[in-house]
Image (cartoon, rainbow, N blue to C red; front, side, top):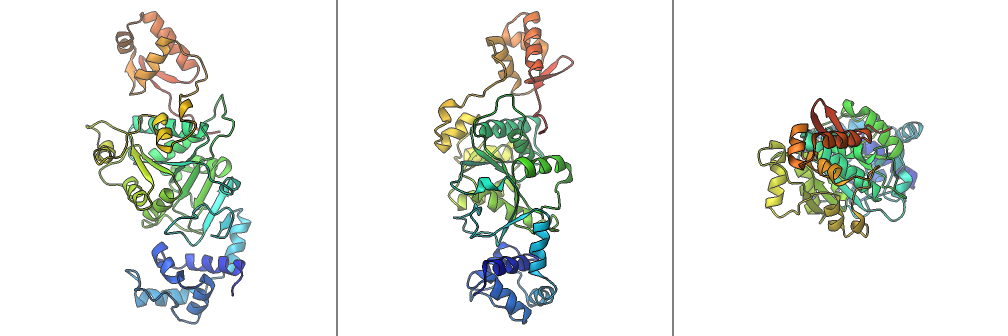
Length: 381
């Protein structure tokens, strides 16, 4: 019988084999230990379940595994991860967060505040959507990320460009008022933790590794292969109590996460969008199919049955008067000209200008000439 260390090392070897995705890994190990599978492969035997091999497992691929496994050293791979400060988490580890996952990875690799994975899990909400998002979609994702985090909820996403990254920027936002126990955001990426992807999210990636949790089922050195992204989406769904889709085209990775959530009995909700926006066609279709709409954080909390749902109003760094509140509500839907704000509010020009100046001073809006818009989510520290 292999030791826990032997099993970890064997699983590292299996994860390094070419074209060994989650389904093939499960097929190899569901009837025996990873250590026994690796030992058999080194003797040029395929020790697998009696079930039919998954699609794509050809004799040529098996021969490739036979050749690769002889060159791989699980102990050296484990030491490599330890030297990089990456924790290798197995199903027996107290930090394993996927206890009820029907399609679990062989291992997880983690950076950041991993202590938050041990013990009773907090509420977790996935905020996902398209990379090709609108400005409004980005702001909605950032606001949800911010407000859910303030209420102790862990925001889960894939750290991709667009909606995913915006949600985590919001979760990591510098706050004037910090919640007593803010949620710790979780990113699940599709590459090795030394392969930052997309490169444009480097600063956010590094901030997540420091102040949040970074997880991957891929060992060091794993590049961004296409098949790994939909595989990653099952973990986003499996880790979450609710999946919120902010924006999605008719086809896209966010809808794959929706399918994975449905398979796991995880609730799905969607943010309504303009019928003229291609980025909202997928989310609007989800609403037609019966998914509950999300108009703000209060709707998310209500779906979760969270005890904090009664206090779902955003805490602002300044007390707003009626005029300031109206201006903030109006520009939440998109930037407006000062003349339009005067017409909408019915206020004096000087009063509206003064109110906008106060909002800009505390970072709630930004002005470009005579155009007023919500402030973009500030980059994390």
